Image 1 (cartoon, one colour):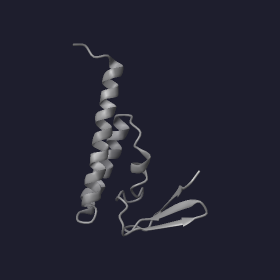
Image 2: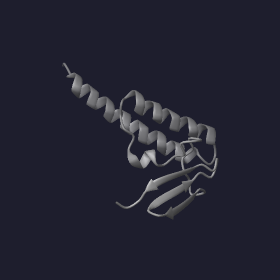
Image 3: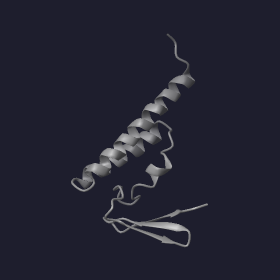
Image 4: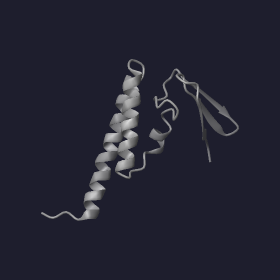
Amino acid sequence: MKISFSRLKEKTKEIAAKRISRLFEIAREEAAKRPALARRYVKLAQELARKSQTKMPKNLRRSYCKECLLPFTSAGKVRTKKGFAVYTCSECGARRRFRIGN
């Protein structure tokens, strides 16, 4: 049975998306106990998205610190200011701003 290239590419992106979300789940679980391992899982998810040319979903892109690659936990601060949510990393203190609302 011959599979077209476009169908194969679509299937590859589907599998990659599932693996990326699973890597983030595991990273969140490991963040408190083993931060080095959590960083590794986030890095693997980034590489997988890049290699499979898959966009990471917005909720996953916003769920980790870009500086230290640790997933945001409940220990970090979240503030709202002038239409933005400001997340402060509990590990390195880096801040990320996301527009909220429209």
